[in-house]
Length: 313
Image (cartoon, rainbow, N blue to C red; front, side):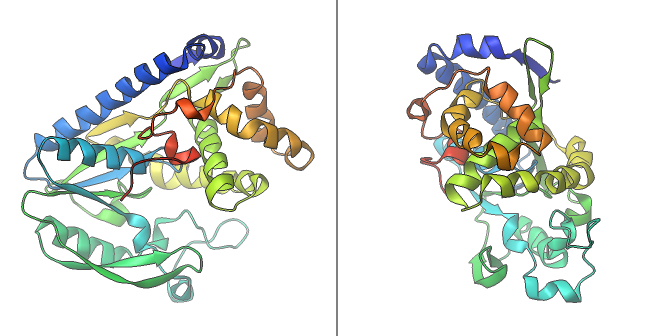
């Protein structure tokens, strides 16, 4: 069920930033706890598939689940499906879909080495060793392989945007649990306009891309159409396969993103105003009071996008 919150309510909350951080993290931790309980209640399923749209907080959610299992005396680890991307040198030999402009559809599950992934998925579930590829984004190549084997009783969480797509995973219900991560809260302004999940995920990506991926704001906006199309075709149709869903929205996060992004977005107005999404999110940011990122907890999901996280693979 979707939740709704008004911008004026958010502004009231962030007047006490430490309190709203505490409440937000407790709410998110409850989702993590529920996911852990689901996993522990299915001891025959030691591989967990965790999916969600780009910017939904998959990595932090996976790592927080691992941390909680380890606190309880168990073993768990995370691997990224990104390692199974095909190297660019393989594209011409594979039937990879093209977008409406004739370019490789970068959101398509066919970008993955599906046969290799399915083979490794089954072997990991059985506790057999695999040689996991290591993907290098800088030049879209494989930079080698690393041995990986699940220990007795260990949980392996495999996170990626296509982790619930049966085209990629095949029939895995007997040995895999499934989690879907997304923003499930909508923000309304006083006129009833709605900031939805794709806008919040966009703000998260704008922070992450500009701060850590050397990607300009305009480039991130230009990718939105392709990213949204990919979500609608390849991700959202399979969310109901999940055993459990996690809402990653934090009531304070828009205030933090305003502190991080707003000035840069204003300065780039002339270059960005042609994007409808830019004009829409600026309208909301203008109504939101900023909050200094120093208040954000080091293991918060928001740190995945603004940096400073203490969580790592």
